[in-house]
Length: 477
Image 1 (spheres, rainbow, N blue to C red):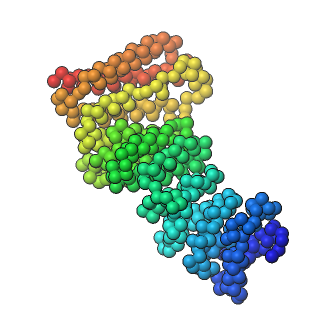
Image 2: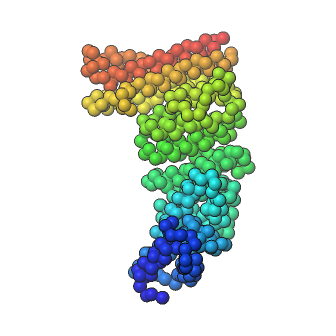
C-alpha cells in the first residue's frame, strides 16, 4: 500500500533476503509464515495485473525488478522453500511478459544459471528443465517477437538448452509452425545478427540443433526447400570460422561442428549435398589450425564423435579422445578420404583435396602488403614461423592425396577437371618461380616474409603438379 515504488522495492528486497537467501535457515521460526505472506503480496502485485502500473512511473523498473527477484527465488532457485507448487509456470510466464526488458533479462539470466547448475549436477531433480518445458510455447513465441537483443539471445540460449522434442512443434501463440518455417525464421535472424556476438552465437547454436534434428529424422520429411535451408546454414557456419571472427564466434562454430559430426559431417548416407558437407569439413580444418589454443582444442573434440564403423583398421586402436589439434587434423583428413570412398566420390574428392593443396588467394598478397609485413613481425603462435603451418597443411594433404589416388579406377578421372587443375598449378609454379628470381640478393634476410610466402606457394604448386602427373597416368590408362 506504500505509494512510493522505491520504498516498496526496498521492502521487497528485504523480504527476498530473509525468505530466499541461502544464509537463512529453511525452517527458521516464523520464516514459513513470512514466505506465505510474501508470496501473497507477490500474487496480488501489479506483476499479475497487466496495465495497472504504467511502465514509465518513477521507480517502476526498480519495483518490478524486486518483484522479479522474489518470483525467481520462489519459482526457480528455491521452490521447495516457498511451496509455489503449480503456480511456478504462472509466475515465470508473467515475468517473461513484463514490459520492462530489465525484468525479462533478469529472469532469463537466473534460468540460464539454474540450467547450467542442473547440467553439472547428476543428482539434480531437473526442476528448472521441467518448469521451462511447461512454458516452452511461451519461449518459442518470445523467440520470434522479442525486440531487445540481449533478451532475445538469452531466450534462444534457454531453448537450445532444452531438448528439441520438448520444443517442437514450434508454436507462435496459437499457430503451429512447420520445421521448415522455423528454420527460415532462425536463418533470417542469423543473417541480421552479426552485429551482436551474443545473439549471433545463440541463434546459430539453436539453428544447428534444429538442422541436426532434421538430418536425423530425414530432411525430405521437413519440406522440399529444407535442403536449400541447410545449405544456407552451412554457409553461415563457414563464415564463422574465418580468422577475422571474434574468438567467441569461432568457439561457437567449433562446438556446432563437433556436435554435427556424427549426423552430418561423418554420416555415411551423406544427408547434405557433397559441396556443403565438404565446406563444413574445410571449416573444421580451418579451426583446427586457428591461432587461438581454445578454438583448436574445442575443434579437436570432433574426434570423439566419429562413428566407430567409419574408423579405418589402422586407426581403430588409436585413442581418439583428448587428441591435440595437429593429431586431430591428421585424423580428420584421413577420415574425409575414407568418407569419399564410402560416398562413392573418390574422383571428386581427389580434385577437392588437390584444390586445397594448391591453395587459394589467401596467400597471394600484394607486394605492398608483404613489405609492411616484413617491417612488422614474422612470428605468431609462440615460436612458430608465420608460414610453417600452411606448409605442414600442404604436405599433410599431399600425403593423404597419394593414398586416395590408389583408390581411383581407370576412367574415373575427368579430363576437363584435370586440364583446369594442371593449368592453374603450372601458372602458379611459373609465377612464383619468376617472383623468386626477381627478389634481391639473400632474400631470406632482406625480404624474409616475401621469400617465405613465395617458397610456400612454389612447394604447393610443385606438390599439386606431382598429383597432376599421377592423374594423367590414370587418365591415359
